[in-house]
Image 1 (tube, one colour):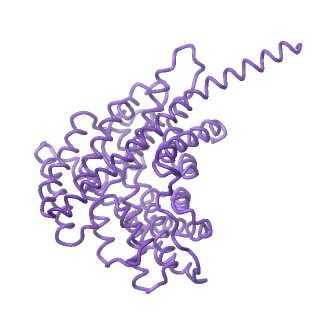
Image 2: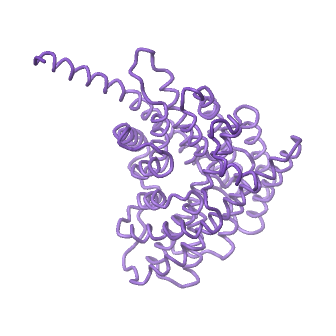
Image 3: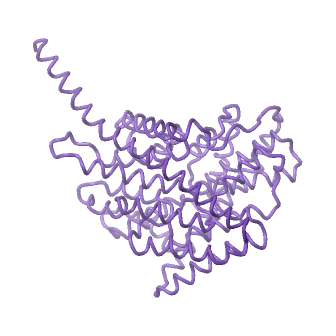
Length: 454
């Protein structure tokens, strides 16, 4: 082959690779922009809740039920698969991203899902719902990447739909938390069964572009900041174990409780039963805030920052219970909203409570707060590395990475006592059964049977 022929082949390959990369770049940019808008709107919604609480706390008994009902109705009426977190929907979409089922992915990832997901979760946040925006951002990002893939002209080089969705999820998490490594590890640990070498370049560039786009508008922020870790005790790893065990058990227990409530709700035959359930959950959330502690409301980010950066580091013993119950009542309504941030805040409250019992120093308390966050999130998701990397990137405290990995490993092991499978796995198979039933083994018989039993 002559030099001209070789150059032509090289140029053709470069053109092919460039055209394949462009959809990822465009989708990543859009994801970053949407994540920025969503982040700011969510913050405004939580400020609205704070205003209501400080103005007249009793108004929660009106505002919370109205918001919960409106958020639930929007999802039920316009996009049933926009309910809940969004991560199980993305996981189900990855399995369905084949020629046979591609048309059904649109039920899980679409423009309609994006709008309903965002609006419903914002209404929930305004009503004090114990939800987060991170899971929804992942479903929104997956929908954006899928749509960009659909809009490609027929002459465009083929781009894997499955890889686009997986990459979108990673980019969404990176943009939501400003945690690029967390997004990559999440894609590898939770989402993909494909060897990463097949799409590593697309994954890395998408995470970078989405993250940089978010940073361009929000600044190079840390989700939580820089907690003090100076002067840690040499034996503090015993404290890490002491926190990781209950955090893992409570995280898995909360997930199990949600699954049981979903199974019970599945037997509802009338709309009024769902309405009564949603109103009942809203009133319970409002009652916890009114009669016990206002920190029962919201995503819990303020609770985490208070424990890490203020002198008021310790929590009363009942706060972790309130945070778990708040998530339970908010998530099972059927409205939109994630469990990532609430899980982190519940874990932080466990760490702060145990630190108070032990009368630990500020630095040691901060470490147990972070360990509780990793432990609780791992108990829900069974992704110890993702949990540890996320918390590490949120705080930039690299000197405690081994402590956080220890917390993740221990909590993952003890969570097996409650349930051998992650919360997201159970919900993924539930969505698959709703869309395609038991066809072709998509709904794994063993997994499906476990959810049915609950």
